[in-house]
Length: 472
Ligand SMILES: Nc1ncnc2c1ncn2[C@@H]1O[C@H](COP(=O)(O)OP(=O)(O)OP(=O)(O)O)[C@@H](O)[C@H]1O
Image (cartoon, rainbow, N blue to C red; front, side, top):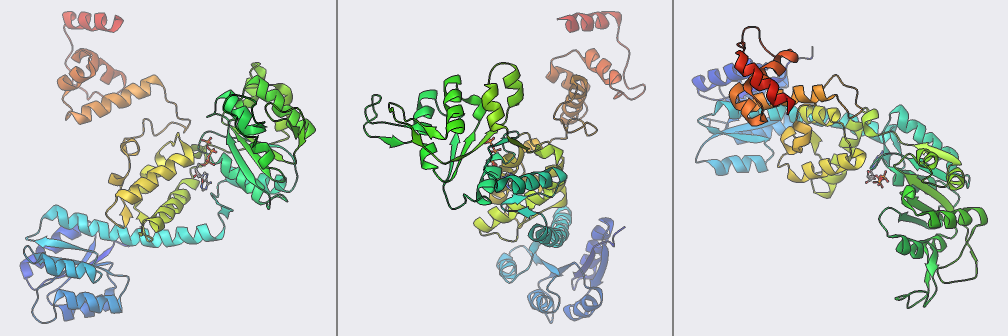
């Protein structure tokens, strides 16, 4: 068990001291008290408290002077100022001078708990984030990647291995797993790094547009082709062309692409002369390309040309170890951009982040952290700064993180949540769910959620109603 956090309370009023001592001791902290600032300073130098809660108005040395002295002697200690309502300006001056927060007097017990909890959490986060930052700096980075899981290390190794060759690479992975990042890293570590990197998203363009984007067109080749335009494959000459969502391209374009790879030349739309291009092709798909070949939906010969080497990026839910590092990385990145460079993530928020299944993978995580950094008024991201989806209880904690649960588990969890939202009132909950109360009770029994004796047996008529309802 780690030592309990240490709190020092300073107030010239003995009753206030007693009250704060009692509340904070109940919270599990080790609490010391002092009746004036001088006593507080001598206790603080022995104890090195994590948090000092001090009254501002005290005879002799006041709370603000104590704050200044504590900052000089014990810069790691956080100070919370307590002030009578009406003298808020002094409290604000205190915050500007470096106090962590302030409490209004007379005290609201919940506020005391919350502010002290936040201060402790802040200290813990600062320490933990410093450690995570070190890890990020040291071992767990490769180019712009963050992640130290076995799955990502295998990806880094593959990138290093294929980068220097000129072979075509197929990058497979769900949406948002970092396929483009892999393509960029291959290019950056290749002999072509001085040449251009051109990315094309084949999934978003209509076929005719994609063709002219890729191959270019001659002037007058179609209505609107007012000038001759070089295609992206031509523009990628001496560099790399990254074709994202390759599964989406039409059969015609598939055969044209095959020719580019085999013959290293292209023909512009409306042009007759072949133009030779020196370009390395990297392709990506979030679909199972081999499966599409087997189903006759993607050319087998193109697949084998693209698939000289495959790099498979595991979904984020299969590399949960990377989640805290990534979350911290994005907090730093967006914190710096927002002028909040020291922003951290609280333990309970990190817990939610780590448990979530992340269907949108790293891109989704990045957006969630960016949003939280913007929204939070604190130097720490708390659970309430995260979207609802993360704060909902995971459907079944015991389930593998495949994203799927059985319908029974889904129903069980849904019922539990509905009951919780209606203070366990079964009649209301049944009504909300659109089922008979007896049906709800039977389901509770089925899932082992009914307390013995809590549910009365239904009459025959009731049961009949239930059966009828269920067969609908
Ligand atoms: N391991 C990682 N470390 C740091 N950032 C990452 C990592 N993986 C992905 N990202 C970031 O996540 C976002 C999504 O990545 P990227 O666009 O490469 O995914 P993708 O697989 O190509 O997505 P899509 O299939 O939707 O095109 C980008 O902002 C990228 O920088």
